[in-house]
Amino acid sequence: MIVFDTVYAPRETKLMKVAKEAGVDHVLNGLGMMLEQGAEAFKLWTGEDMPVDYIRELLFSEDN
Image 1 (tube, helix red, strand yellow):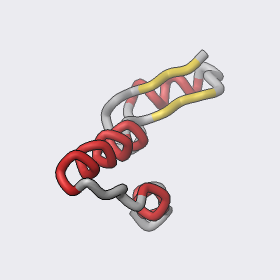
Image 2 (cartoon, rainbow, N blue to C red):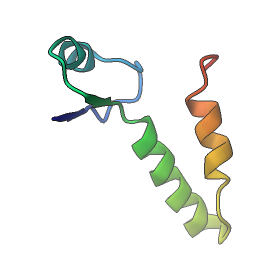
Image 3 (tube, rainbow, N blue to C red):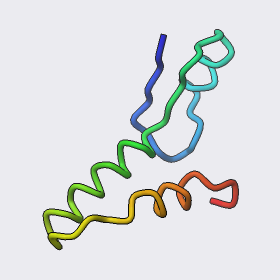
């Protein structure tokens, strides 16, 4: 089973907490979706590829 909450703030929602407690293997928030949407918008506006790997590291770092 997969639980995907499209919310990206807070990083862990009540739905996500409950899913983890219930033993769901794959629990995701909306940060990945936001990243990919941002990359597509960046490409449309600039014609350039966004540095997705770099931005992913920033988004998912423990400091953020």
